[in-house]
Image (cartoon, rainbow, N blue to C red; front, top):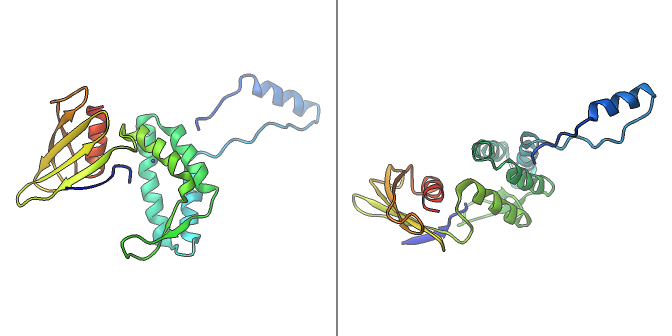
Length: 199
């Protein structure tokens, strides 16, 4: 069975009384030193993906792929209450030019610099419930496949007709050992389902 890493990763603040303060300053003809509103996730996302286009190995296709991928992350963050973790990662990624990285003899592609990887890990763990020490396993078969997630505190095993699901799973170890559940596929699906069920 082959294994690879299971990971692939600000809320606004309202100040009471701010409107009254602005009114008084305006009436006196003064100026305000109030801080600018921090960029939201959509603005940060657009900036990160603009860098994917402008990198030496970048392209419009790379920008579009980035927008789609981070758009899914934004939706997941909203559903799971992980907006602040996503924004922290996007702020890091948008503040540095992307690197060009070639994997497995494929053409180089834009990639966020390693300095932001820890923040992406925090975001990913918030979304999936699966930490950086977990591993994803996959074993192909003739008629069925087996895939699994193994973490220090819990693990799961799934079987199905193909890696694209549907998969029948159970928690193999951890506080919910034996609990059955389903997963959509042998990649993101099993990671999300395991983290939310077996942890």
